[in-house]
Image 1 (cartoon, rainbow, N blue to C red):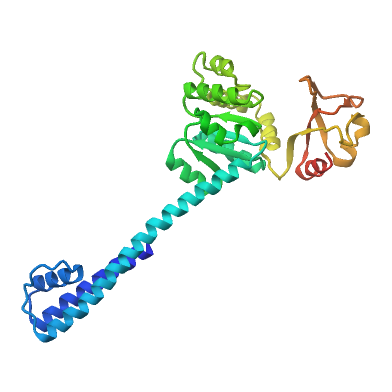
Image 2 (image 1 turned 90 degrees about the vertical axis):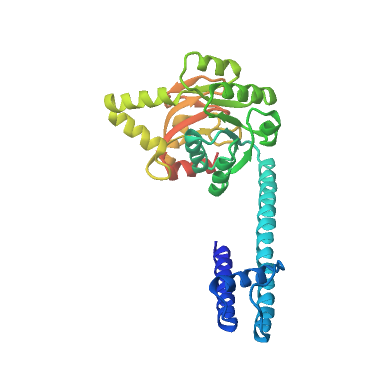
Length: 328
């Protein structure tokens, strides 16, 4: 914008000087003087409407040199802007694709609408790698400005999903606005990676959840149904909802509810809850234990044994959970 303003200002200055010069030197009218200035700057070679004296000819020579210099400068600026902008966009896209190709155990978010924006914000806060596939070029520009990785194209296209690294991905979240398109995305994704964990958005229409599950989704979420249930719970159990909000959305402040996987080499493997020291050393409460085969034990007893592959659902302060994660 500064360069555009400078060019417009410079043009006006040249027109002012040229018009004023012809009016003073040749006693020409304003219109004739402006006309002479424009054809001189543009070097178009139209007939002169003002008879030039020697002084006028010298002035015209100077005006031609200034006009040519201005035109060359203007052409150079326009060319530079076009080439730089194009190269920057091409290099940016290539760099983006290289970063996406290097992702491992990441998540693919299909769609960057209202729900997709919230999902990406939470993934970023949880420091989980992800890439967005969006078909709207304007939305992709917004995504780039946020610093997220994004690919422009349709997520139902196999080639686009391969470019997003679906074979190395940990999960896929299909949140485009259409149930039919979400079904196509899930079918394509499941065919390319049978072990992928897929979460899909449902519009809540009759039969949509069944079709999405049949297509291969692991979980189907209806934002409208969840929103209605939450509003009802705020009326019926407001304190419980406030507590859950604190533990789920508290971030690095206050309490946090987190899931931690126990590896075979972890110091917790094959120990009972009583012997694990989770309560004494880390001040954490184990709310539930999910076994590797899927069984969930809520409020496990102190004698419950922690096995390799278990997922512990713990409640505690963020810094205590972070300290435990370092030793897992």
